[in-house]
Length: 99
Image (cartoon, rainbow, N blue to C red; front, side, top):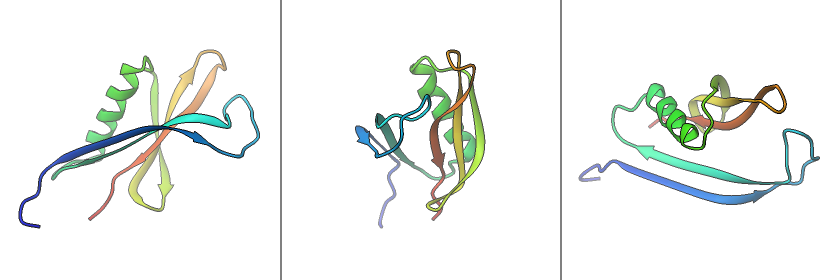
């Protein structure tokens, strides 16, 4: 590649899954996926992007937990406190691609 250009790509779409319904799992939900490519990005940058994204959705109480994803390292799950359920629920998953 002659010249690297930083990029940001995002998609939002409806997803269906064959799973038993309960208070934390629905058969249909909306999924957001994104890729941000630039030099020198860190896990801290990713956490900042996620905090900003969820804050704009009105979700401000967040926790990050290390996780395993086969395609990213480091990886983490994102949890938010749900007032109605009175517990922390997973609202996202994320990670950093390695070269």
